[in-house]
Length: 191
Image 1 (cartoon, rainbow, N blue to C red):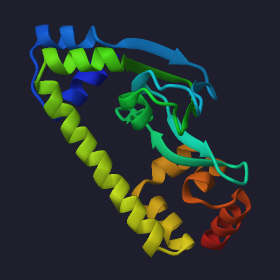
Image 2 (cartoon, helix red, strand yellow; image 1 turned 30 degrees about the vertical axis):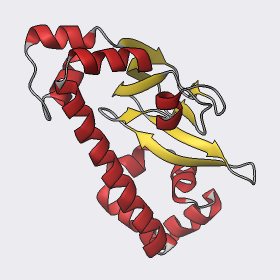
Image 3 (cartoon, helix red, strand yellow; image 1 turned 135 degrees about the vertical axis):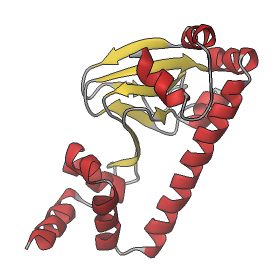
């Protein structure tokens, strides 16, 4: 599994074998069953998770008492509650496995030491966060400029494997739809 992380790192930075082994030592491998909460809203987020295998989601409970999914993390994606992780404040979000998942977990303290000991990892995380920020900016634009139908069609067109992999009620939650509305929309698209 460490090769998945190494291959991912080397898309952005170069590390030799010795440094990679030292970098990897800052992480712990964790394996979780499906539908396990790695973080509950209100807890302090202790880890930043890199998905080796599986699928995670981040969500909060809205004013209606409904789960609102804000993010997903597939293989080679990161997930954490950034504010809670960085500031050691109660989390605004929960993180849950959608599938059985294997992750590399790094604590805030270990991540700070990693960045101190291996400055090249600063570059890596900067690039990763820039890309995540850009993706979130695009998502906000889609929310405000696309109709609900266009928003779903765009997701379907750009990420068909993702839409097939994720349960429809979670796609609906991510898009801000009810599962019933998404079901009607899917029927309309097929016919």
